[in-house]
Length: 70
Image (cartoon, rainbow, N blue to C red; front, side, top):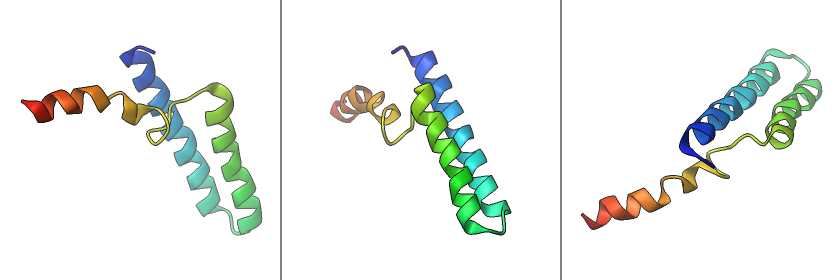
């Protein structure tokens, strides 16, 4: 996966999770809010977006080793 595609999919993943969180916090009924928040997670999984904790942090793994050695 190239850098531009990883960056774009990570931004879209953040937007999806942020939108789900916004909906969760804006709804008075927390059960409905948590069900609607899961739509954001569902989008990340089905569309193949790159979450920082899952895929994106590995992009910097090799570069950080080089920086630390210098």
